[in-house]
Length: 416
Image (cartoon, rainbow, N blue to C red; front, top):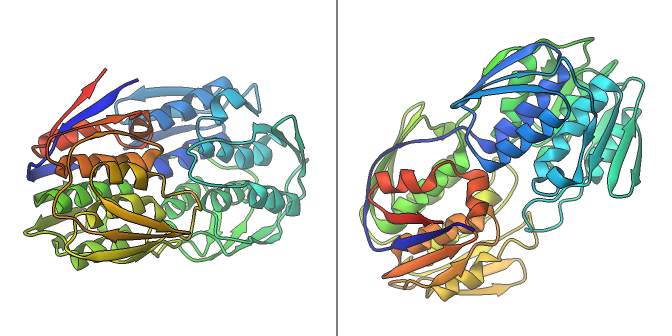
């Protein structure tokens, strides 16, 4: 397996372009199952998770042609409605084919999902919502077996805010007969991006960006051209890296309007930030100040940025407190950060981070996607050499991370 070798202690300066959002591209690809007409997608990131979704769709008979960051997709000859365990186990987002398959073809067989081991992420909200819309769903031998002649509108109130649940139910509802209301819907920008594409396809959706979606089902949907939104988590990760190392950066092709919580916390840490519609300039002139965090569904502070800010707080001039409220097992990076010299204590779902003047290089191991990013940030600051094992986690969600960091002056290389 590949690993990163980092020689830390260098300021970061320069300009990089933000890639398309993984968490928007995956449901958008799944939505292509809703029509037999062709799609032209742009700004699709080149990531392992995207390649997994491509293999999943291709196995169903979907035609996909990739050219750089563009992709042509057409689901006019689907010959299978099964999402097999071999693919689903590596990426939880595979569950997103359930709604489109059930809505268009009346059946689906989808393996129960896997993905990062950051905590329990049950699919019961997906199942309950589709059952309310008339689906018969059984769990047999690790698979969700779903059938419905045609889904019908329903009022669905989810027990919790669930991003993939909202996306799956929304895709199921756009072809259902009648009107569906989804209460307690996720408001994340990636959910909005999917909804906007569905509208381009001919769907009728009201309340986009709110916690109440009203969807009037249509008979059929059409293909379209669509550009995937920029990745706000990738952008925030690079901003945290520069804030930790010191220096300045300009992010092109960004979407600062989707990053209010992260940008505000970076300002609290001492960063100077200017934004336009599609760019962010940031300068970090001094050692960061500690910032307290509590993760929450959007527009709150994103759980996907918690680990990166923990690495930043590890170097801050003071003590910070981080509360993780979304996933119960998302502090696995703490032990590895402490190996680099951080001073972090865990009490339940709370981390107490006492900032230290410097970190020192060590061998560490990535445990999940965002934990990997926090270790890269810490390694970029640490004195000496840091080796990060199991960076295949990073390849799931960061496109060419080492090349972008090298552009900013980082001393980092990928070892085969």
